[in-house]
Length: 140
Image 1: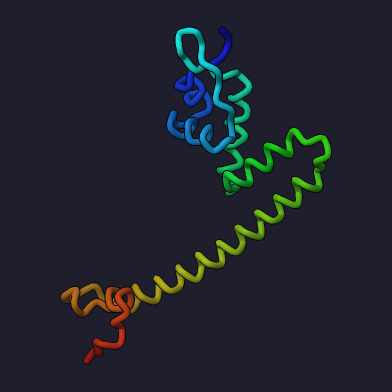
Image 2 (image 1 turned 90 degrees about the vertical axis):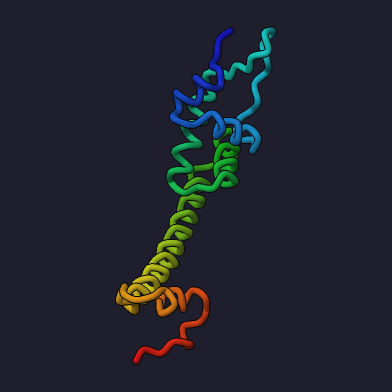
């Protein structure tokens, strides 16, 4: 029988076996039928599908978004504009995340700058800020 075991499929794509099983449970790939000897053999086409999923995930698409992209790939009514719209939405989402991370970085840099790194933990302004006790300690 032509096809790949889950181990070979995972190795060819550069994923772990559990990741392939997870994608299967999420409906991103179809569970293959079992052979007479009870092995699950995946068709060769799943290599391309899994590579698509992996690349899309690396670009920040969620599994839900990837499922939609996979559906659109086989939808005769889908257009380049549909895919571009999804991509532009993803760009905006990433820009928002970058802004949020930048704010977090600034807050952490402020906290790190407030601590001289010496003395007991009970006088640490970083821990005080994290526990909400930043106003209880005053430096002399």
